Length: 281
Image (cartoon, rainbow, N blue to C red):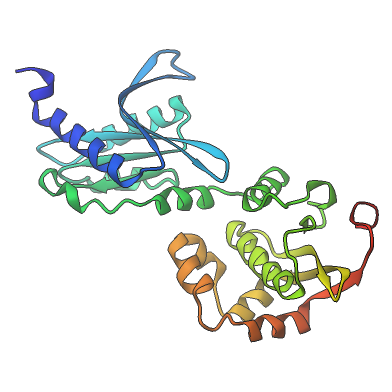
């Protein structure tokens, strides 16, 4: 019997085919080889995933295990070493059986995900691109590098030269918001996004230029985490758990209306007139 005829090989190929059909924006390589940064040898990868999030390339590796018993801790330890050696952003172990309790405990790290998928029920795979976004958010830690990098990923209008990490100031360029209302709305949205992304961020100032009655205005708000959570009736740590919560509980929240945006602006947003963005901001 050739390797291609073996049950475990068919299992790997079916998983590869299913993932390829689900994640059309990603590139999948079956039976890949990635040179180990520490081992200095080529590491065999059942399935590799390459994609792009916020302008950044990501690499994921998948280990497929078609076993007659549960995955044990030794396999988890080996896979964690593979993650480190290949410098993958995340990893998946997919098996037809399950995992021992010690294996689950050892795998409780933020860049490893365990999925149990029955060999004859591959059509039930419910992985979505949200998983990759969630991993990106959960790995963020407050630092000057990641704070500014995240702001840049969120918008091409981010102005690094007019932002200040020490003062927790994020400034956006002209064109990010064209009217006063959209400046208000984006101040709330960008503040909420950064509070969600960085759990240690307690206070933040967002500055956005916009037009009002043919005059240039710089709108700005210095708000703390608790105040914005109270206004939006949300828990940013909860929103951080899954990008679906961000959409359903914030972006699609019926309580977040135009009237509420103006209510927030009246209490928390100020403005000052300017004529030349480069020289005066």
